[in-house]
Amino acid sequence: MAWRVLEHAGQTWNVSLAAEKGPSSSQWNLVVSFRSTDQARRSVWAPYPFTSSSKAALFAQADRLSTKDLQELLAARLA
Image (cartoon, rainbow, N blue to C red):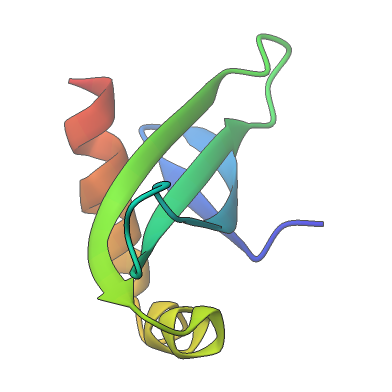
């Protein structure tokens, strides 16, 4: 299930979140997944500069992301 749905360049994108942690790191990093709803079903993964030692705190930070922030992140990855 999508965390959010947004429009960009005439396409609808389902947005999901993931927390990623490297093997020698104590910090969780936020990764955003964008999946188009068109027939191509394009997927774009993008790291976002949020880190935390707690996954719950990381997702709480992510809840404050605006639609504009997400659209800009997607546009940068598609460029």
